[in-house]
Image (spheres, rainbow, N blue to C red):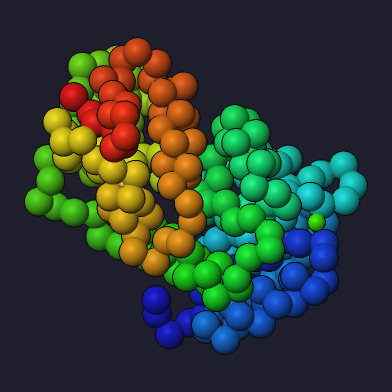
Length: 227
Ligand code: CA
């Protein structure tokens, strides 16, 4: 992070939550732009060009958080953290393939949220590893690390940032059964406090996108292995 404060948008209609998140982010050195509706959020994001968006799913009016995420993804790969009201919503939200980068269930610790914001931005900014093969290939699936592009039979497959990183990590550890905890540490980072089902939902997305072409095996009682 440079000396200029990094702009982050917080789209949340509950003023208590918005102000709390705002406070913690500012204390961590971010510049915060708030919006209390989906429409306003899209305007603020277009005007202020934040580096990351924290987005409440349950927003009033016609444009809820899921719709905001969908519209953002149509034109941009800006990192998005969704705030969801209930744990059970996460599977449903992931099923919609919105391409959010992370999910935080209310009530949440603002400190943890800030840690995730930092981790995502670090990943987005960080130099890509150069000691790894430029293109990992498994059957018809290719992971082009330098271009940050996944392909199936030569055609690019759009992946959310975490999906790409999970696929890359599995590919770099090919043939090794990895536990969910190892995958969380390797892909989400040590500061990740979320639960291990996050891995399962991301794996489900990868399987949905690549189908049988992805030689990914569920290792019962352990986790996953890419062959
Ligand atoms: Ca709300």
